[in-house]
Structures are given as structure tokens and as C-alpha cells.
Length: 278
Image (cartoon, rainbow, N blue to C red):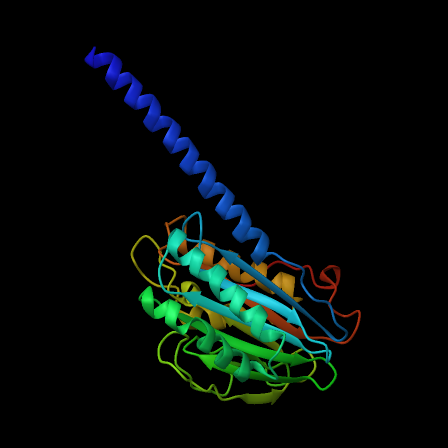
């Protein structure tokens, strides 16, 4: 009798496990669909984004939102936490971003509106989100941006061949404090300049000896491959991270967005399909 009960319980547990796995896979597919939406196209440049979650479901977030004035609003973020809870907050963040993007003038206003909308929810859940939001104007080549506690993107200057951080602008993470006003900065980009947005999962990626990838290695990789199209730069950075980590399970999601200024018809992978330089 006990054996029958034990067998029945095991079958019930197995069925519950299969149901849970199906639901996790569905959640992963939903998140993947939202993160891999349509990438905007515009004259004079290209933009791409990619993410590799540390678990089946991640908490990193990036998005593109074409504005009626011809600008492209770009956002990248990192939700505190891991797995399904972080993924749920990522969906909350995405909704707040898109709602605010429709009715705000610039990236600073966008972050201000987002903090106003989801601050109470984030505080109730004892969480927060770091975000970097930018408007790219393809006509003027001006990038206007605001920061909410996120990593400052890297600016790869085609003129000087050097990689440096964008001029800093401060701002506390969304969910950190109420009634925040996020300030903006602007820069004008030149031909073939590249902006590399990223989450800290890249620079904190670890190998089997618990050594971190670090920003110096990222800058070296970007410097060596800066002449490539955005899709090739993305592959080279991912290859560099994979070679460094060598199969080690990562603790954090790895996410990047790459914006590159190009003359029309110049950003063709076939024109620069050489291997990544180390």
C-alpha cells in the first residue's frame, strides 16, 4: 500500500515538474519575443541589441522606440535580482518605458516618468532598476541621453581611434527615491563613431578562476574591431567573452546595444567580414 502511495506521489510530482518547466519555457519565449522586437532602420547608421541570460530567464532589458520626430529612443537596463522575479520586473519596466516614450519629450523626461510610475511597486518589492536612456537623431547626429544609475556607455571615436566613456550624467536608479528629475547631456557623433551600451554582466563575467572580464578587456576588444559593422562588433565582443569564460556558468546576464554612425550603404558585413581581432 505504501509503495502504491509513493508511486502515486512520484507521478504527481513528475507531472507538476513538467507543468512548471512548460510554464518556465513559455515565460522565456515571451521574454525573448519582447526583447527581440523589430530593430529600427534609419539612414546613416545601424543599431543592434543582444542579450544572454545567466539563467533560463533574465532581468536585463533593452528596447528601441521610434519617435514621431524621426528620432530613435534607446534604453538599456538591469533589474535587481535574477530569474523569474527579475523577468517579471523587466516586463513592468518595459511597459513603463513604452508608455512614457509616447508622451515625453526626451530621455530625461522618460526616466522621470518611469520612476514616478513604478517607484511604489519597486519599493514594495524591495527592488530597483538601473537604466540608461538615449535619443538618437539621425539627421543631426546628436545623441541626447540621461542616466539612472547605469553603466556609462563607451564612445568609440573613429577620428581618434580611442574608446572612452560618454560625458557623465548622474541620476539615481529607478525605484531608488521618489520625485527624481533626471538631467540630460548631448554629444554630436562623427562618421563611423560607435556607441556601446552594456550591462555589468559583461565586465563582471568570470572565468573558472573567478577572474573578471573587466572593462579594460572590453575596451581592447572594441578598439581592435571598431571598423567593423555593428553586427560584427557584437559577435566579436560575444566571442571574446566566451573565450575568456571558457564555459563557466555566469552569475549575471550579458546584454549590449551598439549604435554606429555610417554613411548609407557602408555598413555591409560583406565589406568587412574579417575575423575578430584579439
